Image (spheres, rainbow, N blue to C red):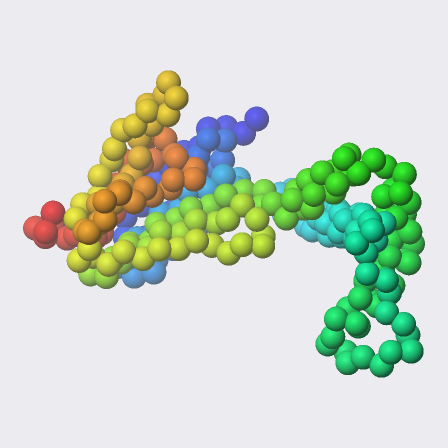
Length: 240
């Protein structure tokens, strides 16, 4: 079990703030004297064992994901809706549906494809189909989640959140300073638990923008980021 994370004040620079069973583990970054970036992540410090484990995951993901696709393709080939392999006598351009179908049928005749087809032929569809989908989904999942808040004095703030899958990119949103009415720490019930949220009040929007909505860090982290954001966004004697 990993130890509980520590936290450091992030003001006019970048820090990584640990959450739950993750750890504080990033070097200080200085974008500019008027810039602050706060990152909350479930990723532990990048040690040598972790690097090796992540490297080992790459071929494992490729094997699991590739075989899952082979299983799905084999299920399709055994269905009554399968399209037969195009004749080799047909001369087709390289980038065409005919060439793609030929390649896919050739893969099905490879040793891994033969194994997948045997499994598809001998395993009940109600068991094989969800298994293949779950394996494919697992091979594309990220092992950690990261959310960050970039504050640019005089410009605004940008929120970023990594997706749960490698197929999707990072979701970002920029809010200009003139649209920011306030930055607050709110309380809300989550089941029987009281949670604290860092929220941004945006002019013209009926709903509050919740920062770190996917990870929901502890109150101490939320308050630390809140102080850092206000200190960077508005100078002493400024609007707020």
